[in-house]
Amino acid sequence: MSVMIVACPVCKQKLAIQDYVPVDTMLVCADCETNLKITSVKPIKVVQVTIAETYNIDARPESYG
Image 1 (cartoon, rainbow, N blue to C red):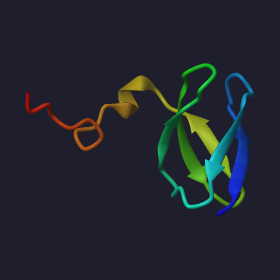
Image 2 (cartoon, rainbow, N blue to C red; image 1 turned 120 degrees about the vertical axis):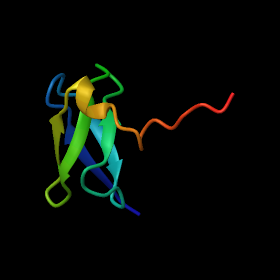
Image 3 (cartoon, rainbow, N blue to C red; image 1 turned 45 degrees about the vertical axis):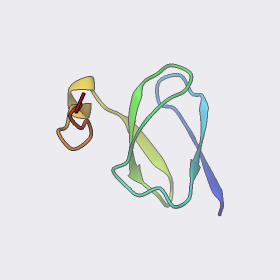
Image 4 (tube, helix red, strand yellow; image 1 turned 90 degrees about the vertical axis):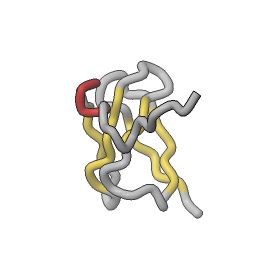
């Protein structure tokens, strides 16, 4: 498995992403905590997304406590 390197569009921190991560995967920059989304794999590209776009019923399952 190989690793792809991409810069955060906000803080320019280098992020290492595994090559098997699919397009439309959401991630968070470890440095500035910006929400990012992978838009392309070859070449690797990420874009900033709003916090509202991260609220998804499938992404945040209910608590059964």
